[in-house]
Every structure is written in structure tokens, then in C-alpha cells.
Image 1 (cartoon, rainbow over the protein chains, first blue to last red):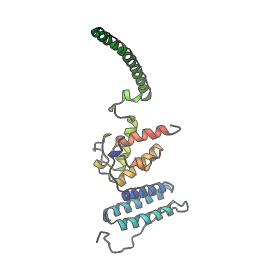
Image 2: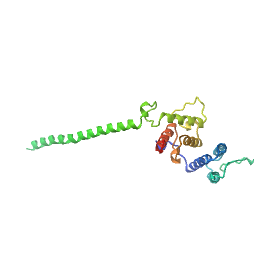
Image 3: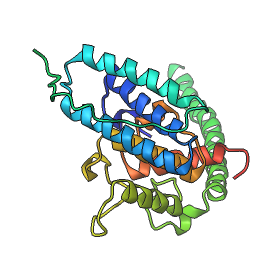
Length: 98
Length: 140
């Protein structure tokens, strides 16, 4: 196998993918119904941020990573049985570089 | 006198040379036969395989991987999917690739390390890695 054939990912991109993997892995430990919900929420959230957040806005991405890691730790707890998200209706903020 | 010594020298040197080369040739041919025997025992599927010799993974594995990729990316039936298909060419981003690898892990009951999962870009690479990991498991 040629290791060079993979896409060149930055350290930050690897961290994001690793976090995503962590969420999907944690979702496996929940009930089938909740698992499906968790996967759907997590997938939507990651894809939304991938689209909206400027790829050069490192500070904001780092913040999202930290927040995601904390949320993942909470999800990993066996006492956590489900995950929910709600739209607080804030005005659309553009997370782009000033 | 000098001519005599010279002729004797040319005589002995080819004789000395031919002996070792013969032995080397014999050893080499022995080795070749042995390694061929191994290859036949190790990969019986290669003889019947429809795929090219370069592909080490079993056709069943490749087919299974194709099915999962098709399901994960929600590809329409008419989309051509070959072992060399690149995930990115099928419209997958890096998040999709993570999802594909996670589904493969569950399907085959294996655990893919993060380092190697980032190097998977085609169906063939996925199938090869799976074969390697499945063989590494204590019970098949």
C-alpha cells in the first residue's frame, strides 16, 4: 500500500476527523434509536461548520474543537443516553476572517 | 618463459570461476521453486480471481467493500464502481471517508487505526487493509 496516495491533511484537519470518528464511535454504545439520532445531529453539525467556517479561521476552529471534545466526553459517559440540539434562533453569524 | 606462465594463468582462472557460478545458479533455482510453492499455498484465490494479480484481497471482500461504499455514499445503481474507484471521485469528502471506514469496521469486526484509515482512498486499498486486519485476528 502506498501511504503517499492519501490526501495531505493538516494537523487541524486530522484533529477534526479524529473528533468526528470519536463521536461516531461513542454513538455505537447508545441504543439503536438514539444512535441514529446522534449520528444525524453530529453529521449535520460537522458538515454545517465545514461549509460555513472559513478554513483560515484557526482560532474559531480551535474553539470548536475544544467544545466538541468536551461534548464528546459527556457523550462517552454511560449515563448519557441521548443527544439533542436546538436552534436558538440567533442571527446568522458569519464566521469568516475579518 | 613469460608466454608459458601467461597461458597457464588464463587456463586456471576460468576453471576457478565456473565452479562457484554453477553453485550459485543451482541455489537460485532452488529458491525460486520454493517461493513459488509458498505463493500457491498462500493465495489460492489468486488462480481463480477475476481481478488482476496485483490485487491481494479476495473478490468477496472487494465486493463487500463496494456494497458498503455504495450504501454509504447513496450512489445510484448505474454508477460504475471498480476496485480502483477513488472515494473522492465518487463525491466523498473526508467526513464521508471516515463514515465509510467506520461502517467497514463494524461489518468486518475489525478496528482500523487512525493513521492507516487516512491513507485509504480507493476500494482496493480498503479491501487490502481489511484482509490484513482480518487475518491478524485470532479467530477468523
